[in-house]
Amino acid sequence: MKTYKKIKLSVFFLFITLISFNNHTAFSQEAEGTLIVDLKPFISDIKLKKKVLKQLESGALEWGISENQFVTTLTNKRFINFDIPHMTRYGTSKEIKLKPGTYTITCIGFKYKGGLSVKKVLQKAAFFNIDELTFEIIEGKTTVLEILPKIEKNSSLLMKIFSPDLYVTITEDGETKIDGKVISIRHEKSINWDDYNGRLKFKKEVE
Image (cartoon, rainbow, N blue to C red):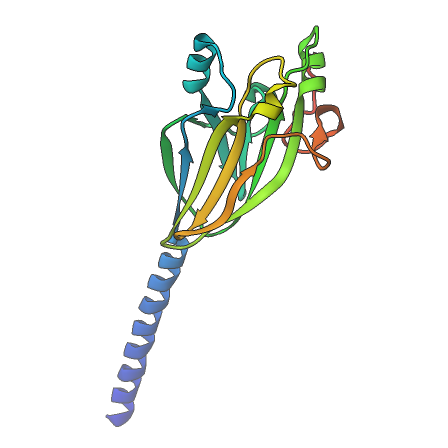
């Protein structure tokens, strides 16, 4: 009789342990953090014509996230081999849930320099800033990507078409990690359109 009671007790504790383990596993699988992409209103250090200013003020940022990579593009997304479903207008924000982990930020820049074909325009204007920044998504916490579209006086001197640069501030659970880092300018680590052979560009050549 005592042996029977011990067996029942062991089975009971095993049952409780299994339930607890399954609940913990389900919770772990569903664990999420929050990402807010907060687009600030467009600003300019130079005086623009009213028509140009109005067009820029009504602009938007296109972006997507896949495999822990946040990608935004100033180059037309039809030339980019990446799912970019979000379009967030300046002065608005978008909130999504993500799995906890480290995410990278890549910007596909575009600075128009002329060209008589789409291929030539891309060759001259488009470039890749790969893994420019990183941010953390923390379980149960909120990470904010604050993005300011801005035209600075110095950068505007080289522009044939006015296009704002993107200044990013990253805040994780209320703590600022990155403050006003520009991600859309060409620099020594940028990869020109023709030189890039990664997954963000279609293999077939643009005509």
